[in-house]
Every structure is written in structure tokens, then in C-alpha cells.
Image (cartoon, rainbow, N blue to C red; front, side):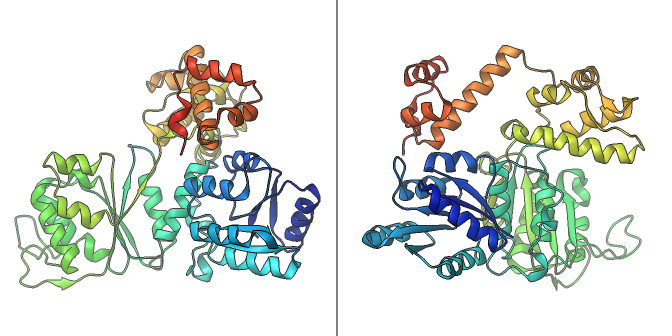
Length: 448
């Protein structure tokens, strides 16, 4: 079953399309205009989109371009009348997946839908049959469109052996994303070996990564194969790669180039087949510019890259994650906690979270441990936040931050069109301009 967003200003055709998709076992998400479709995309990322070409206001091509900028991997199918074929040709040159001419037969429509879903970013063109569910990403709890787009890109990247560099602040879940990449790849039956490069003493890094022979140095009482060899035919995850000493960066580069390792004290090298995923909470470009990271190694690791957003930029996930942690931790501590009391989730949702998801988990764990009833009281949440240094924003500041974020999102959706943004916000244009002025937001910056 796929989730398909259908966009048409004709209510009868919209209903007909919806019924046809439901009959085929899919879930239809209806939108009567391009603007409404963009708003729905902020709440739920579908597997594909079907849109009419000719619509009042934002037409199908404008809608496609807006969607394509935000979700470049989402397949879009265009519905068109015979007289607009030249426009469709132009659209396909810009990246539209395909088109169906109206009036259309249901069989023709579903043939194109099936073809689009076969290469959908959510499935991957060459995805093995046993890897088409959601189990590969089950540890990543989200309903954020930004995270869904990231996961769709990750799933496509997983189908190759290209090295992946993950960037994100501490606590955003870089290792979880690396594990999801591995679980969605052809190497998923082989081991994933995770290495924290900053946690290994500098004098032991080489032997830990590449192994050593017995007697190679004091304390080497037996042979060790090393972490790279342990990950043979699988994936090695090099976390906090920026902490790797320069001398070891040279040796790591050689291993990546030659695809072979030489244990400390060994006379010969041996081949190793690993997929490399690395991560850093610092920008490696800045580390290269400062001379702390080798440029050639950076390019070797950064074949493709993913950036995890901080929790403060995906606030729609905070309540979802908090409830998830509350349930799992309640089981761990054998408690019968059913929910947060009124006000508790609101406090969590407005906290700044410099420590991201890891800090949120710690706060919820403290609440679970100290909770004596079936509900986590708001006062317990407040105490846990205070002890974590995650003080709440004052109400005025929280409201101002939300309002600015909301206005910015509206202008992104409408490409800086103030009239359309005001209409979405259900405010008159004068009031909307006043809000923009209050927050010093220039609509022209959002025009493309």
C-alpha cells in the first residue's frame, strides 16, 4: 500500500481518483489546490503525487517545481488535456516523472502509478524484496517532513557502496541513521561495526582499527584482527571522525584507497571489503581549512552526505519522541505510566534542547524514574528540565520564536508570495505585512 497525494481543483475528478486508488489498495491524500497540497506535504510525505496541470492560482507545473525543490526524489505524475502536451513535454524535461492524458482509462492511470511507485524514493529502484518494509528505520521515531525526506535520501544512498558522511550536532542520532543505512543495504546480513574515534587512546588507534600480531608491542599477548577486518563484507561506522589524529588519517586514507589493511607488526597486508560511513558533529570543511583534517581524506569520505537537523528544528517530533521514550522506559523500570499530565508535553515542546534527542531521552528517563503514579506531572517535567540545564523559554520568547518560524515556513511554501501566504494564514495582507515587519522578515529573500 502506498500513500499518494492527488491534487485537482475539480471535486468530481478528485473523488474519482481517490476511489480508484482506494480500490487498488492505496491511501489517497486529497488536495483541491497547489497551496493546500504544499501544506499537506508539511504534515505527511507521500510516496508519490498526482496533480492536474491546469489549475487556478498555482498550476501543476508551479506546484511540481515547489515540490521538487523540497523533495527532489518524490515522483510526480501529471494529468493533462490533449491540447497541453507541449507543456507536459516541458514539464518532463524539468523532472516530472510522467503524464496521463484526460480523459483517461483507469488501467492506463494505474499503469503509470505502478511505474512511478516502482522507482519511488521510498522504495529504491533495486530494493531487495525482503527490505521493502519499514523495519530498516524502526529505531528512528519521526513525523517531520524534513526527516522523512532525509530518510528517503538515505534509503537511496544505501543501495550503493559509496562512502557516506553524516553531519549533525551531538545527540541528533547519527549512529541510528548509520544503522538504518546499513539495515537498508545489500550488506545488511553482515556486521555493522561502530567505532567512536574520539574514545580510543591515540597510541592504540592503529591496532584497534587494523589489528596487531602477538608481541607487536607491550601488552599484545595475542593476535587481534582489528575492527576493519571484523566488519569484512559489512559496514564500519567511524563516529566523530574529526577526532582521528593526523597520523592515523594518512593510514586510514591508504586503507580506503587500497582496500587492504596491515595489522601492527605484520609483514603483509590483506584485502578487506567494507562500506564506510563516517560522522562528525563538527564541519569537516572547517577542520580541513584549519589544517586539522586531511583534504584528500575528506573527499574520500564525503562521496555523499546527510545532515541531521537539531531537535529544535523538528519540534513536531518532540511530543512523539517523549511518548515513545515514556513507553519504553516504563517497561524497563517496570512502571505503569500511561501518559504525561496536562502541561508536561507543552513544557518539553518549548525547551531549547541543546543536547537534542539524547537530552530529551535523559529528561524523560528521570521523569519515569521519579514518577510514583500513572501520570508524569508537569512539575516533575519542570524539575527534570531544570536539572538538565534545559530551562524553558519565557512565554513571550517562545511565542515570538514560534511566530517567526511559522511566517518563514509560509514564505518558503509560497516562494515569497505574500498574498498567498496571508491567505494560508487566514490573515488580511495588511496584517500579514505588519507581522513580517515586526519580525524583520523580507519576503523577497524567499522568491526563486
